Image 1 (spheres, one colour):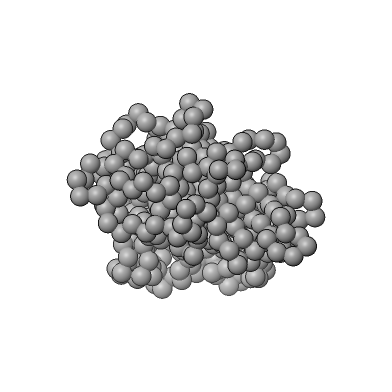
Image 2: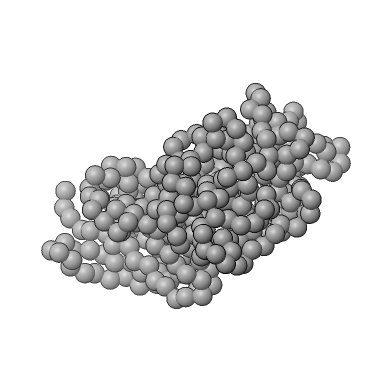
Length: 370
């Protein structure tokens, strides 16, 4: 689907005011894929209005261009090669006029954290338990066996290939490694304006990190990708009532020690369908200490509290997939997303790009006259 912004860029390209309208293909993991019987024309207006992916994982250069006739429709075909090493679960694809918004420079959209960094646990041991074996052990009963409140594992762990976890979209999508926090790892009071974790709450933290968002517009977006999973995958009706997540950017040294900015995520939409979520909030929605500057941040903490019927649940986990900053404020008339579509296939499932494999991705523009 050609976007509204894409039509403007293509028009500028045709009269020589833009050097390209399609130079890169981006893949994302935000939306739920469409079923094979879905009619894409039903989504035409929504896709045309899109200016960015729901959660962009990667952008790669277009390496070949072609022209085909398919079912009587003429189409331009763009092809790009995906990186060999990493794993991605793709649910959306976009075509961009460039690899980056050069007007934004160093403050363009980008991934902030992938949760494959050296995160530590605040509990009994600072090390986060890595689990490479099947999470349900040798018996294969689809029940997470570890007693750890926090652990690290891979999205291609065997347990996530079982039902109903697959149809609930419990599996993480961005890269392979992720961190899971049990729903009772924290207890969070929803006090206004700043949420307060209890004194016994545990969290994960990333120290000695720098994050300067001061040069971004306060209307630019922070996106957090995560999924919610059941401890017992066979319990179809065991849905949490709500999920609370605190992402706290903290200064721990110097005269500003203790100052912080807190992103609060309250997810109380139904968990009976897709469990994969993307939170989107403007930078200015973060609750900040007086005198806070983003350049002060040297530590990031993440707290998780899963509730079922107002009771903290040890039967669910929140799996943290990635955090991204999206620059929406710096306009560039010859840069933008010119085409967009959500993946459509049998079972409404993501397309998996497995690690250490060679894969190509295509995007096709249909040609017509209006």
